Amino acid sequence: MAKKKPNKKKSRYQRVLLKLSGEALMGDRPYGIDSEVVQYMAKEVKELHDMGVQVAIVIGGGNIFRGVEGSTKGMERATADYMGMLATVINALALQNALEKEGVPTRVQSAIEMRELAEPYIRRRAVRHLEKGRVVIFAAGTGNPYFTTDTAASLRAMEIGAEVILKATKVDGVYSADPKKDPKAKRYRRISYIDVLKKGLHVMDSTAISLCMDNALPIVVFNVRKKGNIRKVVEGKNIGTLVSL
Image (cartoon, rainbow, N blue to C red):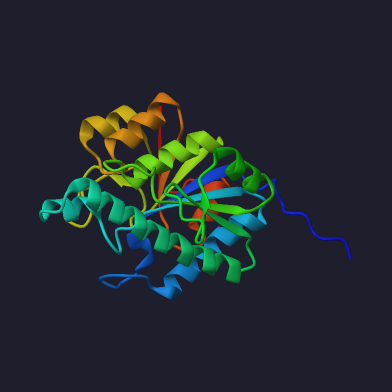
């Protein structure tokens, strides 16, 4: 029997970068990794893979260690940031394991060399993996202190030629204020990069937003906890908030 080809007609985007926070992997736990949540994320990514979409992922490490918080408690900022980068590698390996349990071929590339655990980050190799239908997880941020994984997501997305950044969050878009604190907070369907910066909205850090703005790379902010939302965004449905020019 001939192998069924992935259906690429459904997707609006052919190559995407998914930005996952470390907190997204811990579910309702106060710390660490919830294996059931990680497997849920893997199933959501598998839907994109089955559609023929090329998927790259940048993952944070805030569920294990956050460099900024470490520096506020007296730790040297550069050291704290490197520790945070190592936390992202732990998360990347957990997600890789979950994806491969779903039958999705996956590669982890780390900006800090650790050959026993992951490939070193090489742009052309990453692109080749994507072309071969492998999901690529970028770990260790940019490999430099003082830069967040949001900035790493923007940088990697541009380097691999992604058409959009999918910013996975706990809320269903960008609001004018914290919807948990302000019941009158307005959700934006679409907002410009400049307005995000002017209004101080917590979409991604200012460096990441500026990089996307300079290169006209759109960002879709959506609720990853709702099953099927990643697929709906890629299909072009009106989910979350679009940040663009």
